[in-house]
Image 1 (cartoon, rainbow, N blue to C red):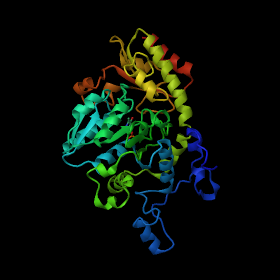
Image 2 (image 1 turned 90 degrees about the vertical axis):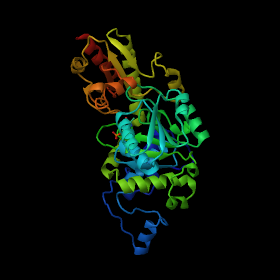
Image 3 (image 1 turned 90 degrees about the horizontal axis):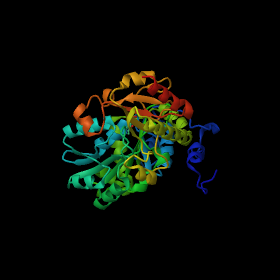
Length: 414
Ligand SMILES: *Cc1c(COP(=O)(O)O)cnc(C)c1O
């Protein structure tokens, strides 16, 4: 293969390992388990450590199998550079570790993955103030900005209520103010959306979810899209300012977060994720189709009080989602009418499994207020629009009729 032709999304991922020198003609990047890397003379080792020559130093900072995955994710996001981490949360935590200091301010969407919400509380206790705003309207983000605002953080489609952030207008605002715009793309995945297109400087992906897709490995990534001018970021250490500014962000994050805090992705997990990523586009096509069919059936059923899915015309950001994303995603949530017990309903499902994960090939369901959003308490849940009966569905690749029929029979049998 040559690089002249622009290949499509799946072709590019499928053949990316072969573009490099690959051991023994192996079609998959091999799993390299060595923690240490030797060189033919000691000077070469020193040159690698000093960054004068490319190469691996020690497994915590990088590994050939992990690099191959970083390269794939980077291609998916059309990025400048990508760093992988042990989990999605390690990737988001790396932002706090490498880029935020006492006195800084962050504006974050209030409609947020529960553990990211918890992380913001942790950094708030360490001297970083965080404003949580309704990011479906850029005006709320703008009103929260202060001279100390370093980062604006949003999710594309919020988990679990599926609010869609005002992605493009927030991007324009951040660009104008020189603020780093970070978009968690987990719910859309780079197949449905590239946050670079709305001016995101850094993109988060929980590789655990749609990118791996099989639910057998945890992983996360941060992609620098190359659009943010790091010369405008106040806390880049002298050490990393030796490089051209476009490299500063990745250099500081790799050293200050990945190296110093050690949330490194293992080579076995990187391999599992890379294998899963090959079928991401196919899975998502099926999952998004299934999600729309399920959402429509639920919305038409009188025993259902509300359905939240951007693919429904009743969703407040339906038009926006249609403009931004290739499809409406594999996640929906819904509320049952008061007289139906959500636990009894879940127990009647034959195919959908009560479990906490997203983007899995199997359909997973979870009663949000009683599990993943339990710790934050009723008041905070109410402020995020989380009803006590809300059920989140991560839609899998089952045959559409089987899946829709499963929910239908569980509603009927009360
Ligand atoms: C799951 C998830 C994360 C965290 O990923 P882990 O790999 O579970 O740590 C972050 N953001 C969003 C939107 C998620 O759904």
